[in-house]
Image (cartoon, rainbow, N blue to C red; front, side, top):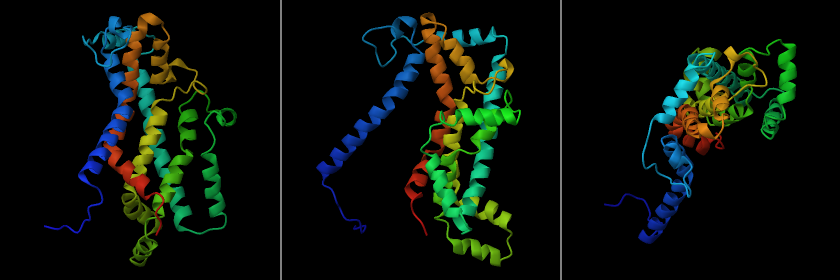
Length: 283
């Protein structure tokens, strides 16, 4: 039965394509597989040369040692987790809302300076966070937000990558759909929440992944100095600095830190692919 699809490659060509994809997949999966195996290795396997990819005698001692060290800390382990979860959740949620609203206005309303504003946002993508570290600190100092959660959460609102992706994806939303909603009597805010946001769900899920990855791994040592406000990556980083004897604990720390961004990415990976495929398509 013909399906209307034209065969463009031979069987040999298909096999070659799959082999290349498998090769690249294995190449990119290697660091993840190595990190997971490394976390379960005893010390004698960690320092084995040449190193082995797969653990031979898996053990949970690295994780037990990690929680034992954290339990002896002056600040409880749960406090570090709360700080990181709160900063990540608040910063990600606010960034998605603010970036979505800004992208909606720039995408669907041709006001004076809108194109210039978007070009400025694109230019900011070229700057490393290290370039803006000093200006950010000066601003936070003037606002008296240093050594508070706000010093980390508020700058996350203005991540240019989120605004860029959302604006590009909103360009694919037909203006006729918005105009039809206005004819039916829908208010601007209602159109934004009930029509635009569900339509661009793949885009804001992609932004969520980027934001979670950025904030979850933030040590925030430039802005937060009180021990009770410091983040989990900072606390775990202090443990890794304990020397060779904590190599196993360091491997467990690496796996522990990457769990949340990895889970978020896997949950939203199909939406990320859709966003990248449609970000340059316009009505």
